[in-house]
Length: 260
Image (tube, rainbow, N blue to C red):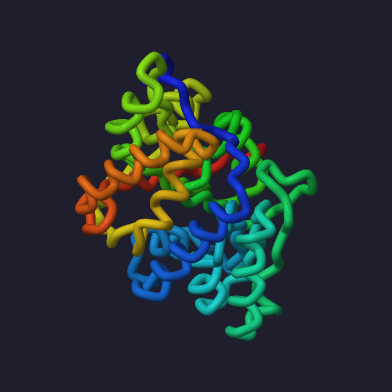
């Protein structure tokens, strides 16, 4: 079990980091037909007559948009002001004001929501209490709860270079399927699990972006010598952040309890 390692959870990213993430998500949603995503299809499969969805951590709207265009009514929960700016622009540009309501909160949301499907795509690893996160999904959904989580480590390059900067510390990692699913089982949530394989494009288009992100992750912004060393490592390993990479995603799907 991965309980022994430090995890990056509930991390408040800087505005610049959130902007960089938002731009990457927007680029990804523009390059791919999200209606072909197994995550989108899993949501649609479980919709009822109301066609209502809560998109937890909606980000730039990569799932809210196609679901709304498919006739769903979306509550898009997004705590980041930087992400919400992109989300609001997407809603306006696609005339989806009557389909998508933006909820400026973290999850669990302080105000009760009741929908057919609760979707949390690649966000539960930010939760300080994953069990409370899924219990809130149970309480919100009448038909289905759906999580999408990474199976493979999301930033393996950070793990590789961490000892250069913090030799006496274990590298922290984002929680992945192996961390999250046992917690669901312990909470008596037995779900269907589907593992899908994806080939993702490079997350970063230029070295400046990846340097800024890693400087923040490694907590070395105030150490000029360390930043210079990081810059050298990026030069030596440019294929890691420039090239597409295969990855696995777990879609975890379960029926909420009828008395939720």
